[in-house]
Amino acid sequence: MPNLALVRHGKTEWSNQNRFAGWEDVALSDAGRAEARSAGRAIVAAGLAFDACFTSFLGRAQETLDIMQSVIGDATGPVARTWRLNERHYGALQGQNRARAALEHGNANVAAWRRSFDAEPPALGDDDPRLPARDPRYSGIDPVLLPRTESLRQAADRVSVWWREDLEPLLRSGADVLVVAHTSSIRGLVREIDGLDGDAAAGFRIATAVPLVYRFDDQFEVVARDTLTADWSGRLRAFVNKRKLVRFISWV
Image (cartoon, rainbow, N blue to C red; front, side, top):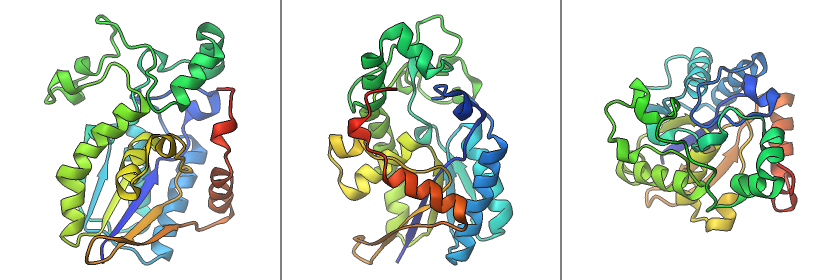
């Protein structure tokens, strides 16, 4: 009965500044590092071990995984990185403060770009130095595949490719897997596992560094879906996350 643990990276310096991160590299804050250690302790307390780990090309997810591994020890298996687990690309909004973006573009537009499953933020221009095709980390990837902006649907769709081609076959083989990534990429995986429609997928949220664990039976049906916490901080983040009334949020 394979297990899949999904972990969103810990809080970052930009979280405190209310800025769009997307594919920009942002370091974890001290609070985020503490959250990552808490996630590692939750995994240990649950008695989980992994045959393989996956993370994105972005430093905040990689740092979270590194810290978790320092707590978990040798029971994590080899690590592979894939760009398909990157956060949703926020296009020209990346790096901007959300409130300032609302003043520039209008709150209704920014709220739609954040919450709607199909709305795309303004795209990066051809000469923008932030284009992923200009980043050496993505030099081996067909530039046609690399986004200039993404809707929630587009981000979920690129993750779905990785699910079908890589993760699902590995789980079906019986491997236990840890994925440390981002809200949008985890949304894409949960959309596949739970069969979410667009509205439900758009409303999906996951707390920072609180493991979400799926257990599958021999027919690859989900038999358990658990949220793991190791301390009051994790329990509080999980509690707040469950009670976010996303459909009623009109401000960015």
